[in-house]
Length: 196
Ligand SMILES: Cc1cc2nc3c(=O)[nH]c(=O)nc-3n(C[C@H](O)[C@H](O)[C@H](O)COP(=O)(O)O)c2cc1C
Image 1 (cartoon, rainbow, N blue to C red):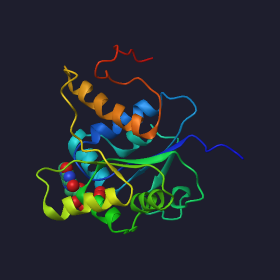
Image 2: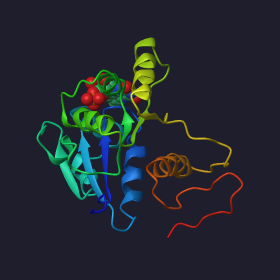
Image 3: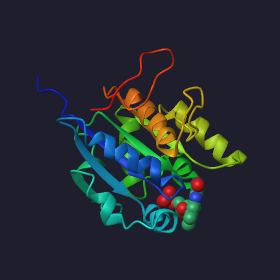
Image 4: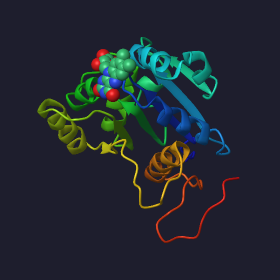
């Protein structure tokens, strides 16, 4: 039997915290033999410009394949297209809610739905505070359906010195959840790692 291709789907939706998504993409690019599929919602493109002054094309350069959010017939919309998993970072309250209830009205939510139905890793990185009950309920429902909820809340026990350190913390957690080996951030009571 052929091995699962080393492919990861990265989704960016319209929440604050675009830097987390970009840091993850930049790190994934350094992992040899990994194919990165990217989908950004319209909301993500708006926040990217407003929050970071970046154009979506700059971020798209970090992926091997870029899919339009409207393209619900793209490869990643099908369960037969094998992947190691999907991460949505940052994940808006809107997208969390749609995913929780199986609403697949764009390629990002469809790909997330596919990962749940195929029982593949789906990691959601929400960035909203405070959290209202509808979003809390949606997060619980998504978790019950098989998603991993990884709030954009980096730890401080590794004594971060910079924003870069905070981003690295989150990226490392995503890599770990996807089962990808890459030393991005220090670990608790493990010797310091040096990035290649
Ligand atoms: C600058 C900016 C920042 C935003 N930050 C957040 C956020 O942190 N969390 C969130 O859930 N929505 C946030 N939103 C609102 C979402 O972008 C909006 O609800 C959108 O419809 C989400 O749709 P999407 O998930 O399809 O991208 C923000 C919007 C803008 C313009």
